[in-house]
Length: 252
Image (tube, rainbow, N blue to C red; front, side, top):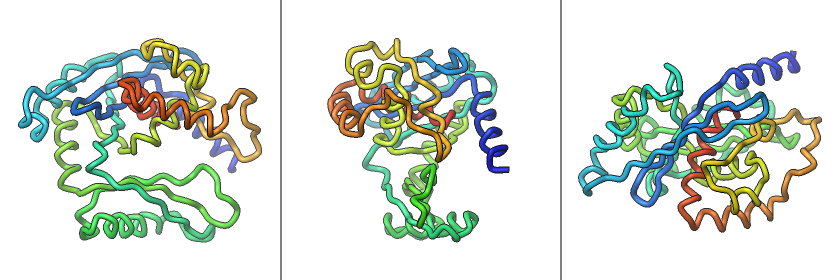
């Protein structure tokens, strides 16, 4: 049954043709659209940037909504799911280690309490998302979470909904960037030398591998990836990597 469930998850991810991610970029917002190129690869299809004309636009986001609406009938099909990263000042992140025998149905409440405590808000005043690590260490299951104030999240949700999109997930920039560079064809070398519009991403490096699967021979070390990320995140290419990594979450 476990093998059948794993096969079904991979099939469902394989059915995704287009995916979208949106990341903050020095006061602006960058939208990335990825498209399935083959059974093994996805490529960049769209880059689009919206920059507020005034400080007021940054607050009410009406300009961002109009920008997204222009792309609502883009080559993404009728179901436009958007993954996004919020500006760093808005969000907190953390993790909880649950005993293996702890039922997953109880994670939600515990994560909500943890987020509320971190933000010093009531549990019903927080917005949060969480994701378990693909595999446990044999003793506990680590669950990563990201959260912000419900009022702040409502502003972005309303903006995105008004444009005809649906907010599917919120993630930290660093997590999305990690996903992007690990899946990038050519790895850190391509990240630092290739134009972002030419990026291709390997789906086998996005979809979690089963515990008994060996790593791909060309997989880079954590140190190499960290050095490349440190360099790219200091440039405009960092926001592009984050937006692409957010879109790749559709295949995770």
